[in-house]
Amino acid sequence: MSPSELVAEIRSHDFDYYLDELMDNVSDDVDKREGSIIYDALAPAATVLAEEAITLANTIEFIYTQTSTGEFLDYRAVERGTSRIAATKTQVKATAIDRNNLPVTNIQIGDRFASIGDEPIFYTVIKVTDDIKTQLSFPQAMTDSGGVTFSAVATDVTAPVIILEAEEFGTRPNGYKGQILPVSYNDALSYAEITEITVPARDSESDDDLRTRLLSPDTYNAYGGNVADYVDMLDRIEEVGAGQIYPAWQGGGTVKLVIVDNNFLPASDELIASFQNEIDPTPSGSGYGLAPIDHVVTVTAPTELKIDITSTITFATGIDETTVKNNINQALQSYFGNLRKGWAVIDATIGRGYNVTVYRSQILAEILKINGVTNATLPTLNDQESDLKLQATNETSELPVLGTVTLND
Image 1 (tube, rainbow, N blue to C red):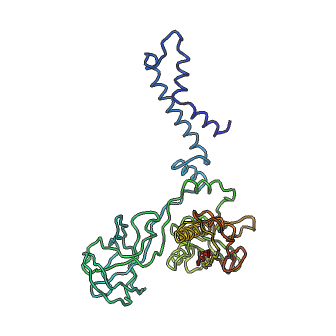
Image 2: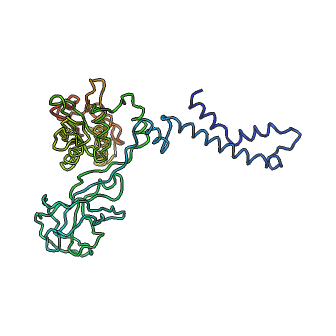
Image 3: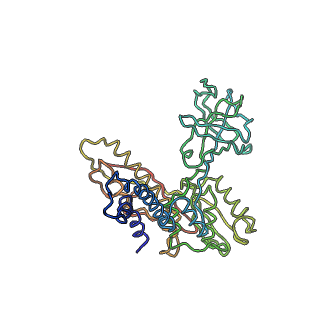
């Protein structure tokens, strides 16, 4: 009997099953009808036994990685020498000005801000960079922290860069850019704005993703600077979503790491610098980072390859074509997002390299799934009638990004 069959059998042992079992051990000359003394005496016991059967079935499922969930799956991960990838916090870049359209210079580490909206996102200042400036065009009509609307000249303002970190874990803050309001009192501040998501956050690894990773046949021991060791290093850096690893890319002892952020988009300069410092400062191979001694590690971001898609669509009668086209765009954005999630998966079938291909047939399938589309032609990719294989070499690592979508009718 397999574990799944055993669980199914135990779950079948419900209240009626145990009540019948108990009643079978009672003499037939005793009144067993519902409401009788013996029925009322045995029914609570049958209820408890049925509840214990559910607990036993759940316990059996928790034993095995294939069926375990939640904290029980976390325990299984620890036994494999790993752990669930934790959720992280978003880091953003912001600027602030006063009523005279001049940069505010008295913002300090620890000051708090909040986004506008019904469910605000709260941020804490973690760094104020004086030596790096940014330029930002503020709107002519602005609302200050007291709710008063005032006018300012819409010219570029050079202001200190403020780095904030969201106070909540997860990806919700990844989608917010715009005005933020001070929570900490600051009488000099009139307008502040998030201008860039520098380090997107990620959600906690799901049970399905963790289970897949634990059961992967390609899992092997991370040791001494092998590829698995660098994969493990990438997993431990919360701000990095994934990375491609190119060992000995410029000879023995050299390693190239091509990384993306938690949105699976090319890492920002700030993220690259931070990760380089953690892995191999300088780089020098001195062993002061996570990389082994004599491993000279170069950290960089992939090259975005924008892919333009063109197809001729036949729409269903009476359908709002604009809505259908918007839905197609959203579906293709999701498709490319999934492509990027698999961008750093090592393909053992090609000698443990990386294989990312955009298939025209898969894009056509995504289009045909949309309600209101009755037919579509096989799309072209960057005006080419062929699938598009991305480069993944020591010199160039391409990341697929959706370009212009042209839907003819």
